[in-house]
Length: 261
Image (cartoon, rainbow, N blue to C red; front, side, top):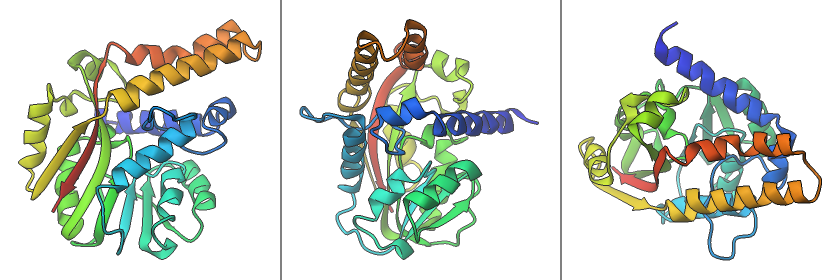
C-alpha cells in the first residue's frame, strides 16, 4: 500500500470514529456537522456556527439554481442544509465512507449519494452548475489536481465554494492525515496557485478569526464548563481537547474560497 493510500485509509478511519462519538455529537447540538464553523459575535452554539459557514459559502453562489455537488459530504449535514435552497433531485453528495454515507442518506432523503473519491470523480464534463466542499480539500492529494478536475466538471459560469486550512510545513509533515504535497507558505502563493488552474475569478477570504480561533475559544470553554459541572472527568476533558490544543502551533490560516469558471 503506497503512502497516499495509507493516508486515505487513516482519514476514513478517523472520521468514521468521530461519526459514532456521542459526546462530540452532543457538542454539535445533536447535528451531524463536523467543522469549525463561522462564529458571528452573537453565535451561541457550534451547530449555529456550522450553519453560518454554509451561509457564508453559499453567499458566493447568488443564483442557487441548477445542480450542485457536495464533495466529501461527511454525514450529510451540509447536504441537508443545501435542501433549503435546492430540490433533492438537484443535489449529489460524494464521500469515501460507507458508514458516513449511510447516515447522510438519513439526513438528506432523496439526494443521490455516491461512494466516490474526490480525486477520482467520474462525472462527465460540465456536469454541475456549482460545487461545495466544507473543510476537506486539504485532505485531497493534491488540492490543485482536484480543482483541475472541478474546472472540467463545472458548467460555464459555475463556481466551487469551499473552506480550506493552511498549515505550517511541520504540521503538514507530522500529521498523519495531511501531506506536504499540499503545503503552501502564504496567501499570495495560495491565490497564485488557484489562479494558475484556469478559473476566471478566484476570491480568497481569510476567516481565521471567525472560524478557527472562535471555534477554539468556544470548544475549550464548552468542555471546561462540562468539567466544572462534574459531567466529565479530568481525563475526559484532556481527551476532548487534545486535538484542539495540538492544532494551535500548526494552523496558520482558515480560508473561505470561491473559484468561478
